[in-house]
Amino acid sequence: MIGKLADLKNLGAGERTLLDRLPNLGNPKANWLQNSSVLRQEWRLGQPIRDASVDATGKLINNTGFLRAERNLLENQGWIYDPATTL
Image 1 (cartoon, one colour):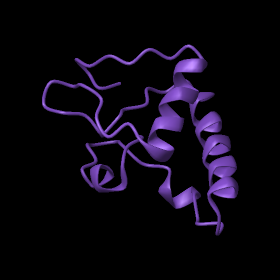
Image 2 (cartoon, one colour):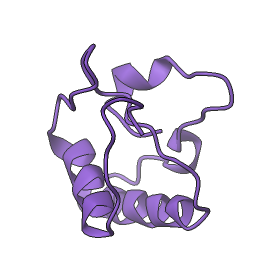
Image 3 (tube, helix red, strand yellow):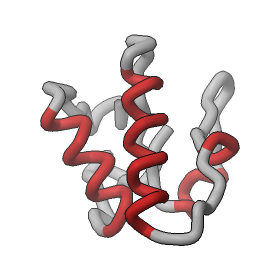
Image 4 (cartoon, helix red, strand yellow):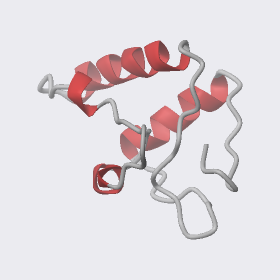
């Protein structure tokens, strides 16, 4: 699951975040390199990735910072977001 930190607290059954694999490395550039690497490892597994930062209709919200970069990375790799499932 990806999303803003506050939104990642509401995990469904079988869901997980990548936070345990993303320790703070002390600067944004190093953190992004680590984050993007872990995200790439996950998408190679072929499992759905849910976006937790959405409104009641499934529309993506809070498109800033690392979440924006994560969404862009996924889109650039051909992933398509489905607001009906938030996957």
